[in-house]
Length: 451
Ligand code: HEM
Image (tube, rainbow, N blue to C red; front, top):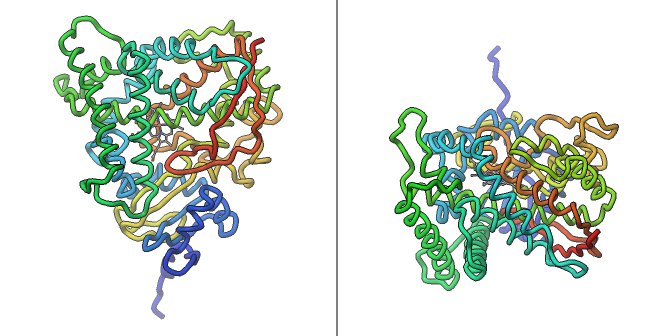
């Protein structure tokens, strides 16, 4: 008798509407569409969006397989093309050998030594922002975007920006991010060379950002004797571990700076908006954070001091569990492969979702509730979820290089803020709106009181 092995099947195809498939439903329901799909159809499925097929995987084991075990089979492919318009071949968008060489060179910048240098800037800006207007509603989303942009520009360039230059930079970078996010969410995009109004606007904002950065870089070259102790300094001195002479060119530095800005600015601002939205509804959590800060005399010695603030870190982790700003991570199959025993065709688009895994009732009890204690080791409510069920900074070799930077930025702001302030809000029904990042459907409004 001839033995045959059973064919490996693709994940089940969930039929949508004729011609458009699930396009309209996904546009209308946003992130809730994907939550519904996972509830109704399980951990592995295929969906049609117009002519495109997307494979979705929701199990922690799938996260590991895609992001940790097979990073050379599942690469950052066509879905990253719009970002490449903006970021060239920087760390976020490059692949293969190019990427490994860059990551090796840049890792030390985000390690303890680099972070201790940048901490001075983060601390200075967080203190500056920690006393907002009191007793009136503040557009907190906007405030957090301003804060994270100022942290980025100050720690990258150590520069004192004038108020109107800061506003122009904020507008230029959010114009660029909006344009690129839209192109990443669209199935089809008009070619960038067409003279459309939005293309012209993008180019204008892009050039403004580039000119500003080039201006700072050039003046730094002329005055290279005095160290500025900022990211630009670190980048200009970064070198290949094998060859002291192999340094980054000015174009490479620009790609990296912009990659850090784009990858770090909006993600951190949104996390902080959601964080304060949750805190404003949970006064007891605010008190526990304030008590912990007081116990530490509101001090923060170096970039390792985060460990002195376990409750604050638990509250930040719990925010990122509920609202991971990178809520969906897309890859392309470089070759035919399998995930969870299912076949994925070469060139297929694959997505895993931190948001869906992190709110899955199989791994998290009361998954939609804000309970910081579940991250607090030793507490009764501490809960050890499966290893890859909490991945806000992704996992594997392409995980977030800026995670420590982001945590410092959030924690330092909170430490300064809770010295004298508390927050409340009348909003209780803010919904998630997911494009490339996880936004809120309306701006988060916060009222600050002084204690
Ligand atoms: C709370 C804030 C942040 C969150 C939730 C976050 C999340 C993530 C995630 C999920 C990825 C993987 C993306 C993918 O594979 O498609 C990523 C990558 C990356 N992040 Fe972050 N990030 C944050 C802040 C930052 C900051 C502050 C910086 C820089 C200063 C940064 C720089 C980067 C870079 C350069 C990559 C690409 C790394 C590589 O491919 O080697 N991120 N981030």
